[in-house]
Image (cartoon, rainbow, N blue to C red; front, side, top):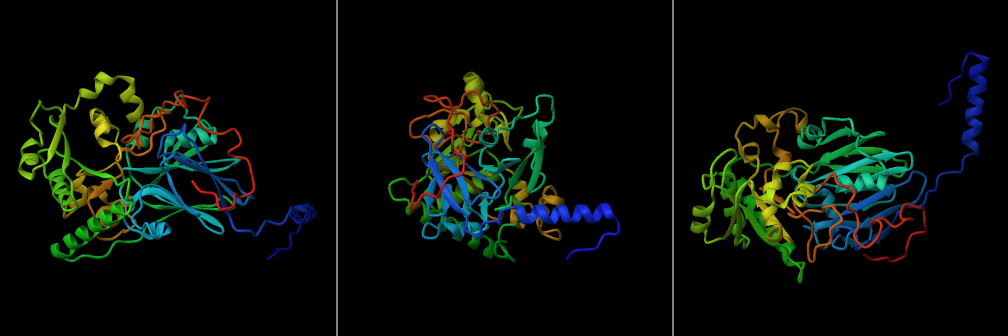
Length: 416
């Protein structure tokens, strides 16, 4: 609706605006399409997507182990291999990925808070990636050298959508939610589908077992490349609980940091529990990673849980695996989860943890790093969103093709 303005100046301005709009090319009504590139210089599970307003092509570049089926892509384990796009409606995905639709791209995070998405919006478009360094590199943005609060911004998860400053603009951090980016660059963060209600322990454990069976079925469907099941194991309650659950679907291997925070060697060992469950166990001290120096630091320097750096000695044991971890079990299983209230939950009333994890926290361990390394058979590394951007690519000047962000016709029937 046009409103008549009272001043001559306003009337002139209004007509000038109408003339400008009429002279602009009409927006295309063609459906968005996916232009997909695979790069051997990227970590195997890393991916980034670029949406440019006014263009019909969504540019995508990914590592060699990112999967694609038509207009859907994902890294890690797809729980609905016959219909990958259904992951968008799953309460507890164990992957990151996205689906190009007619007028937008819908991205998903895992159904837990240990892996996230990063979004940077610039004048050229919107970049979304499962890696912070990749999002920065693909967008051309940088962290602010004089900003002192990144450890807080990246190390604390307080909401489904948070942000941190860059040299120009901000980076948006998406946790346990779906992300919609329209062809015009409009950004929406929306809740994941709510899991089924449960009213007693029997119905709860039944749902957990059903979820684990779903994971096992999807993993078996991968045929020649199933993930191994591994658990982290300490002397507490959380990790033994998820380890027992993992045994249901064939978990046989566990890893244990045998000293507690500020404790002594052996005071938090999972060795007795592993022996009782008949598990193969590898152990390390919390400080063992220090011997690796920068090689460890660059993988764990910044992410949601930077203290995961203590798992660095297990990096070879965690490749191509799904990690069962009891981390933050007091939040997931406490009958009065006071840590999970407020803006973190989509559900403002009772039971604030319902959508942040009724199922055990399964994560695609060795999630995508962007440190530029090309370790044989590595799917990547645990929580490896390093701030080091100087190590990109070993055989080329960098992993991004020079023209990957330019508009081009969609490639018919292209496959990853």
